[in-house]
Each structure stands twice: as structure tokens, then as C-alpha cells.
Image 1 (cartoon, helix red, strand yellow):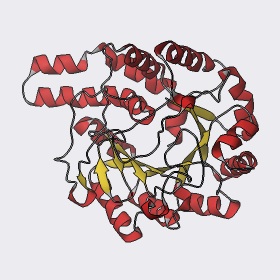
Image 2 (cartoon, one colour; image 1 turned 60 degrees about the vertical axis):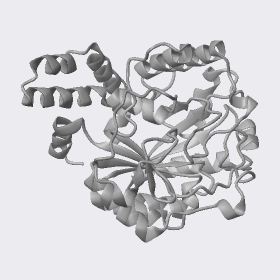
Image 3 (cartoon, rainbow, N blue to C red; image 1 turned 180 degrees about the horizontal axis):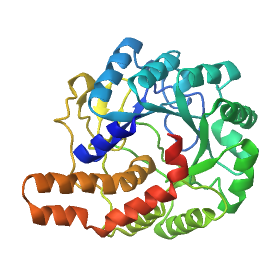
Image 4 (cartoon, helix red, strand yellow; image 1 turned 135 degrees about the horizontal axis):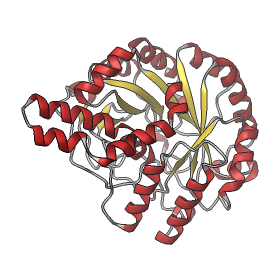
Length: 359
């Protein structure tokens, strides 16, 4: 992205937007805490986003300010047309990321994705040893494939982050850094345990592996924060503290920007404000910006939305303040520009700057 375009987007409405595009609901893994699991989704329910309609959807998203596109699923690499989608998004000027279990990232596949513009990978890791991770995934040998893919990605200039769901498969988070370094990861992001989502996104399940009480969640949050001393953890400290407030049921400092700056597009090309909302916003073909919503929601703990909202908070406040000034509302401008949360948000950006720069 060009810096002057990004600056204009910041001044206009708070900066570039992000969309999680689930190109398929099919998956080849059998994770206990996910309903995308190959053993749970009936054959007749499996869907893939059609290529031509997807390419048109990318153009619509670009017109509406989407500049970060995250290809996810299910397992997105099972979609045969994924490289073509990555190419189109790249040509439009979007930074492209891939969320994957890593099982199908053979050298030819990864080279093709990188050649079409893939910027970064986010690969799922469930435990601090290969035996536990592979047993939960039902993907024998996947750790070695991840190690080889990370080595190749580094040579191709593609970033690689481990996505670790907090679950009972983890005993001591301090065991993670050595395992992740051995697999070739440069950073990690924690996902909070989910047993249900109200949208059609299936990345959750009623599993004892992810069913925790408040005291346990506090211990997980403490451990995640402590791990920052030993390994690059992408979840901003401010976001982890807000998740602590969420667990306690007290007001959180940062609203989620899902539906305003972050979105979820499914395999049927329906656009949702996030993976947790109960109804879609509209078919993507009808998305013209009027459907955007900003209502201060803090209903869930979806890290990809909550972390991004903390990072973008200061930019959105700046745009709010400039908008108030343009209307002659000096008091409103002061409220937006002088919020203490803006400094906290800028601190979160600095905390994550090594990863943000890669995009």
C-alpha cells in the first residue's frame, strides 16, 4: 500500500479495513475444539466460494477500503483457486495473509502462493510438542511439513506466525517458545477459547479442551503476557487487559470495530460484521458502505477482531476528531482527540510494529 493512500484513509475514516474471507468450509483436520472438523461437517454441506464471483467480490471490497485480506476457512488451501484469488487481491493493492493448518503447503503450492503476492502465513499450533498437536489435528507428520514450509517461506520473504488456541493441550506456555523456534516461527498470536459463535463460522465447539472458568482464564492471560519476555507475542498488552475485563464482566476500554473496519466474508459471499454476529450484513454484491455499523460492541473474545480494534483505535479517534472539527463541534473534537485510550492504542502499535511493518 502506498503511504499517501494509507494516510488519506486514516484522515477520512480511521484507516484501511480488513476482511476475513472464508473461501471454503471444508477442512482436512479433526480438531476436537472446532466444528469445521472433517468428521463433523457432512459431505453435502461442504462449500467453496466460486472463483469468478470471488474475484468480483474482491473488487467490491477494495472499493470499500479493504486493504488487508485474510484468506481463511475451513482450510483455505483446499480451494483450488486460492492462488488466483491471492493474485487478484495483490493486483488490487491488498496485503494478503493466509490462515492454514499447514498440512497442504508443499513446496510447489507455497511457491505459487508467494509468487502471486502472499505476504504472510498464520499457521495453527495446538500444543508445545508434535505428538499432542498432531493427535488433536488428526494430521500425522504435519509438524515436519510446517517446519519445511516455514523454512521455504523465510527464503521467499513470506512471514510466518503461529496461531495458538488457549486449551488444555497446553500445560505451561513457557514450553512454547522452544517448540515454535524449532518449527521456524517468528511470532505467535493467541486465540481465546470459544465454545459457540452465532454466525455460520464453525471455528468453535463444545469441547472440554476449551471450557474454562474465570480464574483459569485469568491464569491464561497472565501466562500469555509473561511469555512476551521470551517470544514475540502479537496480542497487544492493552487487548489482553481488555480480555481480562471481559472475563470479569466489567466495562472494557476498547470497542470492537467489527462491522466498521473489520469484516467477515463467507463461502456463499455473504458479508458479516464479524464471525460472531447472528445475521449477515448483506450479500457482498450489495456492499456499498451504508451497511457499516459502529455500536460499541464488546460481545466476544475473537482475538483477530479485538486485537485489531485496539491497534486501530487511535486512527479512528483521529478521524472522528477531524470530522467533529469539520462540523464546528469543538467539544466533540476534544473528546475524540484527547482520550487516554489513544495513547494506549499508539503504544500497542509500537508493541506490534515489527509485525505491522512486514505487511
